[in-house]
Amino acid sequence: MTSFVIDSSVTMAWCFEDETTEYTESVLSDLSEGVGALVPAIWPYEVTNVLIVAERRKRIAQNKVIQFVKELQSFDITVDPQNSARIFRDVMTVAQMHRLTAYDAAYLELAIREGLPIATLDGNLRRAAVSAGVQFHNA
Image 1 (cartoon, rainbow, N blue to C red):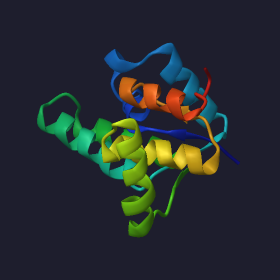
Image 2: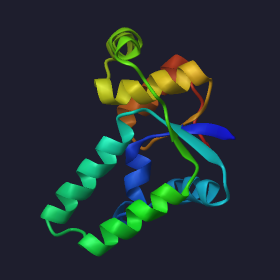
Image 3: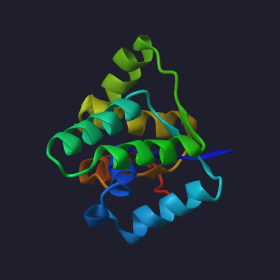
Image 4: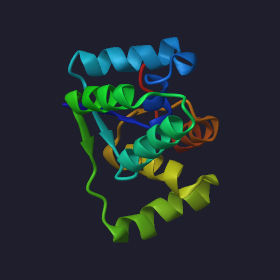
C-alpha cells in the first residue's frame, strides 16, 4: 500500500554517506519494511542523473551505482503515469502558485492529488508543502 511521496533528495541521501540523516534513514527503514512510496515520472530521471554525474566525478564507483539501483528496484516504489496534459495544467499551476521548479512541483502536485504526505529534504519544497497543507512523512 502506498503511503507517501518520496523525492530524489531523500532517495539520493541513501547513496552518499555524507548526506544521510536520521530522517532519510527512517524513510529508508519504512521502505525496507515494505511500506510503499509513490513518485512522479521525473524521479527515475533525477536519480539516474545524480548517479551519472557522481560517477563521472569519481564520487561513486560503477559497481556501487549498480548495487544502489538494484536496492531501489527492490522497494515498493511506484512511478505515477503522468500524462502531458496533467503536467502542463496541474504541475505548472502548482509551480506557479508556490514558486517552485517544475521538478519540485511534480512531487508536490502528486502529494496533493493523492492526499499523501511527502518525504523531502528540499527547503523550497518543504515550505511549499506546508503552504499547501501537505504533511511530511515521518515528521
